[in-house]
Length: 97
Image (cartoon, rainbow, N blue to C red; front, side):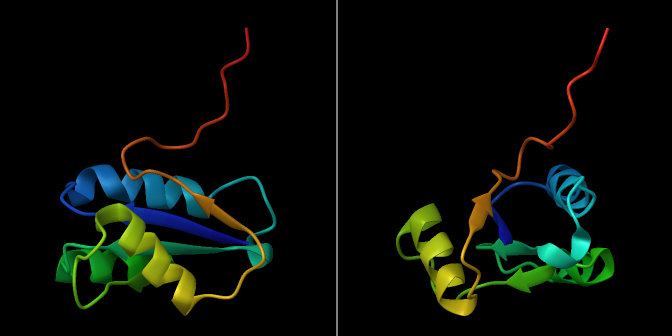
């Protein structure tokens, strides 16, 4: 399974929480790969992805906005299943009372 986290203009502070949460999901780590899809072509995002254990993907243009970003990533990967997380929220377990 591939986990795509598409970004464009969000801050690294917001995006890093989502990437780290995706990497830390309660799912066998050897069964999925996290991809940070950066339409902003930012070196700090590439460095963070490499440090965190995600794969950084960017593209030569910004055609098609977010759909173009996702389509480009699909051409670079080969998993049968793809999960897409918007970069703003972080996946978390619900609290129990």
